[in-house]
Amino acid sequence: MAKDSGKGGFVEKVVKIKRCAAVVKGGRRFSFAAMVVIGDGKSKVGWGYGKANEVPPSVQKAVKQAERKMLEVPIVEGSIPHKVIGTFGAGRVVMLPAHPGTGIIAGASVRAVCEAAGIHDVLTKSFGSTNPVVLVKATLNALEQLRTKEEIQRLRGVAV
Image (cartoon, rainbow, N blue to C red; front, side, top):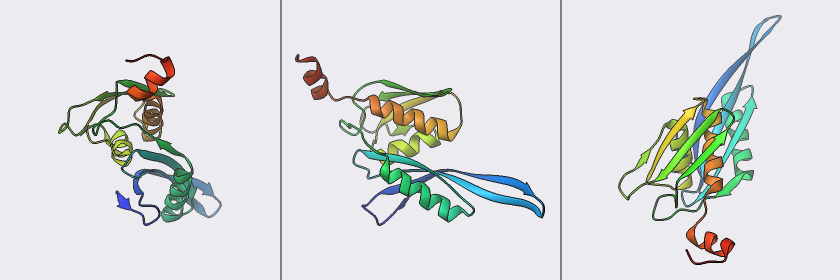
């Protein structure tokens, strides 16, 4: 599922493809919705959601949207700087820093975001919703909350 798109060296991962059927006079008309996570593997990550009548155009739309919604994630020694809890709707994702060599301990949706962002060692647990779209958004909410030691020192005006 992960592939390197030539544009900007981004790695794109298709998290979920949903098929929707509309019943019309002649039968059923199908459309597709794709949830895609892209990242450069060096701390930038974004997500997109695209809908179209075929799968490839929906993925292309999602990638285009993801490129516009990029987020910078602070990474310390291949892991996250501190424990963080991200929420979106009924979904909640807890992320903990891990020692080098631990790997990404996560479900498919959260793993896709972590791999795209370039996080190599992290422990995660998701609670509530199991919907991949909600889990991706909760994971990105958690990553938005991350701060480095230097940022905290600057914001508080004290040495930590």
